[in-house]
Length: 288
Figure 1 (cartoon, rainbow, N blue to C red):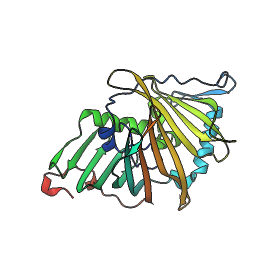
Figure 2: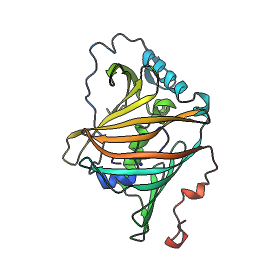
Figure 3: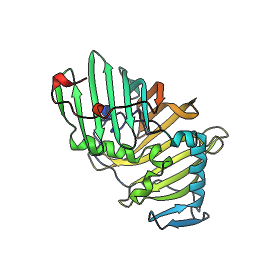
């Protein structure tokens, strides 16, 4: 449920890449320049993981461990596939547009197929790593995903909560650090941890100081004019299913304006998801 906006991936930032094309002209990631709380990082112990070749902040690592426990601990970590169903609604200038129902098939770490229905149309977005294909019934189009959408899918993997909580960032040599506490409403605070990648891309994750549940993911991207624009995913309405606690509402914001809302009606875990779902059909007639 990208550029951003909405992928219904479990604990991932919301972007269904379909909305990326509807809602955004952006085409690349840029270095974030959010200000830290003064002295926040300097007071934290830092260790170096020699195997992964990444720097790990002990305070940040503790916050992540608490977040993993809050979303289900071993039950969450044991999830290998999800099937999610719900509704995604794009926004334009603060006004909601026509909603689309979706079914999202996800196999970790990088296989995803999302089917959309609404306004008399049926479409599919499918991705496997750095490849993918799309189908649109209205235009009778079946083709490979263009490079820009592949790049957006890769970015969505990078900014996902699964990336943070499952430690996928380690294999890419990202640096983990503690930023500090941020205001999150009346008598509420969020602990903020940061991933900094070797190419300079930065993601801040805000996690509830009391409930330890992920609240936000923030990063910056460059628009078509080369200007950096703040992107933000907000996670809400956490529900527990089979011992796993997930956000059933994901709102995406760009430069402070809402661009989409994803509402899950149901999520199933570790259901059989055949590889054939992700393979590009040989013809339009073969699309299922």
